[in-house]
Length: 259
Image (cartoon, rainbow, N blue to C red; front, side):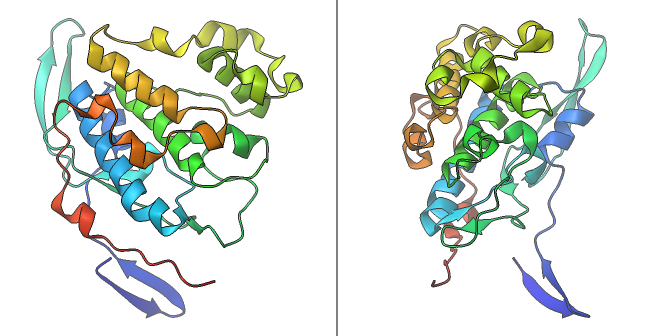
């Protein structure tokens, strides 16, 4: 935040001018997924920010999605894909910022029953069991999959179908957490358009399996068992490659108001 002012009763806040969102860049690039190295760098920044700034200060974003993660600079290089006969863009820098805290909620504040945009909504939110920081972690897992593949993991608008897709993709352990009446109606769409998570791998290289191991830990059904973002930073996926953070990310300070 640079400054704020009141305009006829409307609170206005000024921020740095940012570039395209990670979703808009993906869309304008014909949904060509980001490279494994780019996914790693963005994942490390996002996980660090949520661990060191939001969750440590008792805040849950509640609406994390690719549209709310913006590039600092979305300049790109262009190359021609002979096989697909099209021009493809590669973003020059994957430094990002998380935005849109309009729904962010402190631990002590009222928690709305339903939060998060549908495709990134955690199972405990769908089932109205209550939510906290782990719902952000689930959203991040969905986002990393989308960066890697170029399409949404849970493409649905129906609760039962959404939960059925989770079971189809994440495995039978859903039976322990999800009521049977929610997952019995799988439907033709789910059977034909969803498959076990590891079958989405684009390569058998170790770093690709490490990414999916990270995603699986973020997509744990039980919130209390879901990966803590502070622990995610120690994951083997981040041991190699570029994970340098923008200098400003560790300078942010968010102070939770007293109850």
